[in-house]
Image (cartoon, rainbow, N blue to C red; front, side, top):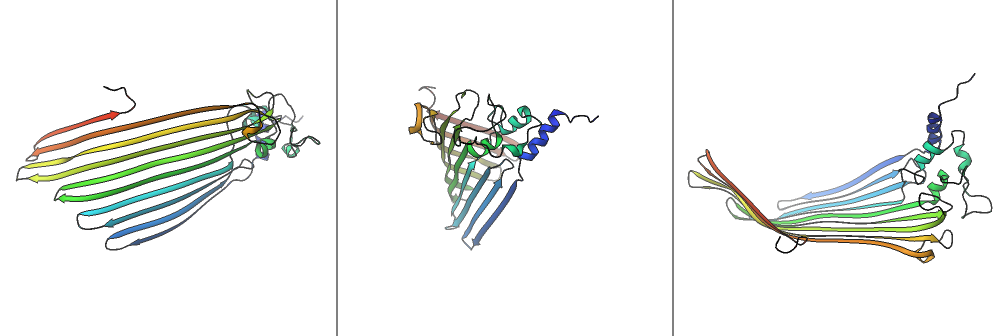
Length: 317
């Protein structure tokens, strides 16, 4: 008598029939130049990934440039800028619950169900309204999830720094620099008719947008000293100040079911649109120093200090 294959092993085999072959490719081109007074470099790279889950992929493009220029023996300019763009028309939700294809197949799909029978996922005569699946209580056709429940992702990142350095005297240098780190994201979700998940039991679709933005800037003035005074005394340290500006905001908007199947817009919400938002701003003014005073390499006095003024604290704190 043939012994049945364990249920979980058959479930994994079913999953294997569903997953595709992934592809990952990376391409890069760079140009650089240098001279007596300057150094410059530009590069452009792209990474493309085709997911093993059907109808998923990710594009990532990065541009990077750096430029240095020596105006004189005392004055030097330095800069670096990087820009990255990520874009995906659809990415999988590998999580707990009926929103996860992997969870659906491994934990709840019947081992005797054929994945190939699920490719044509619309019920005849009910295209755009009703999916086909072995059960309609809670879970979903994985191909229907892959091609109709779409989650897009778009993100831009910018990181840059500019600095000027000036040699005031031998062993004494001043530097003024500013640095920016900022990003913004937009994620959308198209939740089709007849798709079910926890908390959305009516299966009448939804459309959602999640927007997030962050900006962080630090501008610093720093004076460094590394100097010998006479024959026996040495001083090494710095004194400086920094101004930081930070803000973050978040907006989430969703329909409350759809009036018309397949029309993904807030104007198509069956009930009033629901909105959540959050904003956080902060400013920090800082001053600091650190110094080591040495005598004949056997006695050293070290001292440091810092004071910060934060906009997020009540006055007097």
